[in-house]
Image 1 (cartoon, rainbow, N blue to C red):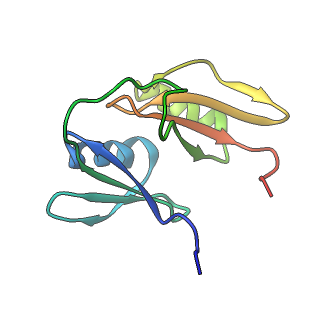
Image 2 (cartoon, helix red, strand yellow):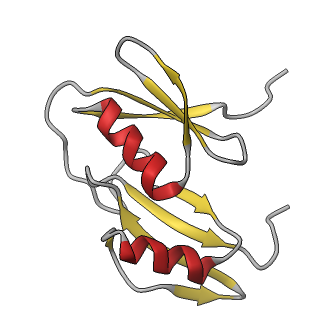
Length: 124
């Protein structure tokens, strides 16, 4: 039986440093440190693995092939947006609201695209 996605991985020049940014900026906790990889866990149990990158980074736009963004679920959009602004996070645009859903896109220190998301009604 397939249970779902346990984690996703982000390749980075410095796994420990990028993992620490997710801890400091987004409230994740480090739950595993291997010899080269670091796993962080969000309060809801979802995880990201940071692994050593090889080679050069290609173009990273919202529509380039591959994984495009990670959605970070929040229950107080305005407070989290304000906190990330105070931390100097690089926002790609302004917050948007549609049908009660609030979203704003931003990047981590290496240019990976994320967004804050507060849904008025969870998806089924």
